[in-house]
Image 1: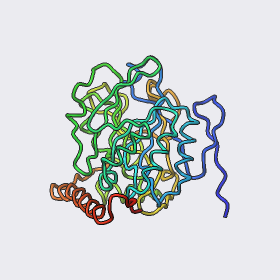
Image 2: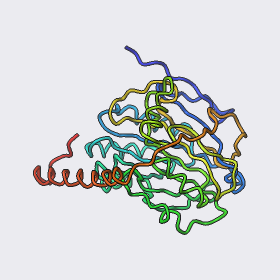
Image 3: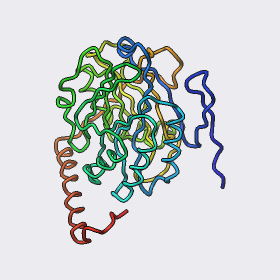
Image 4: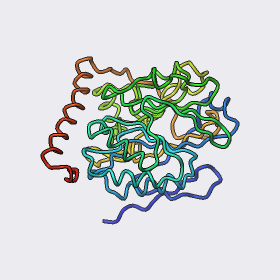
Amino acid sequence: MSRPAPSLIVAPPGAEAIAVPAGFVVRRFAGTLSHARTLSRPIRVAHLTDLHVGRVTPARVFAETVNLTNALEPDLVVITGDFVCHSQAYLDLLTATIQGFDAPVLTVLGNHDYWCGAPEVAQALRRGGAEVLDNAHTTLTIHGEKLQIVGVDDEYTGHARVERAVKGLTKDVATLGLSHIGEVADALWPHGVPLVLSGHTHAGQVTVAKLHELAIGRVVGHRYVHGLYGERRVEAGQDGAVYVGAGIGAAVLPLRVGPRARREIAIFELGAAPGHFAEPMAEQLPHRGRPPTARKQDARIKEVARRRARRLRRLKAAGPDAPPKA
């Protein structure tokens, strides 16, 4: 059975049509009012999340992701965690994928990265040329404009340290936040981070009849499931906005059903004010949400230690020259 033909998009308006592989979607948004006031020239950011490099997602998907991202000509690529699936067996593919991007790549880690070995995943990312922000921030100069990027480490496994990440931020400089878990945005907004990009949910992977909102919102308890939430038209230091990406790969089943569940690249034109051009979706109200109990959070933290101990036992039994298991 042949694959569906690619679709065509135009981004930005007036540019040549770009072929979008079947199963992918590109969504384009303006930045916040704060970005429009602090940037004299737009900065184009491509947001990806949840690559999940591994056997669940075909290798061709990562080549298609890189090619499509490069065709969109972003100034910066940001990827918000879960680079691997269930093992370290595909770290070379992860490194090669990161090396393929034409623009600088900034990243934060996710829960799967910690389950599989955060130091090894971070090393693979750095070998590919990416910068890993672990509760830290950095400043880039793009088109002569300064942009602060704040990266918060994985909240799910208990590694987020917001106060450390924002320490020393410069006021009146355009700022963008990265976090694998979208709910971290609530803690970043008061520190002058008006827009946070995140992932983790895969948009539920099945978005028919709002099943994603039922499963990820009501059952799991996330306030932010997929798309834009909050308000982009507020002053820095007040409430802001968060975008939860649908992701690229999958960790269990490669099933993606419904238009909002397609593999997604989100383009943010920082410096363009909200309303400057038509967007595929508006800001949504958050779900009620249900934060994890202290007992559940403790169990998540212990799970990372348990998996690391198991990896070390296997490595010791197999010998130092044994390849990682898939």
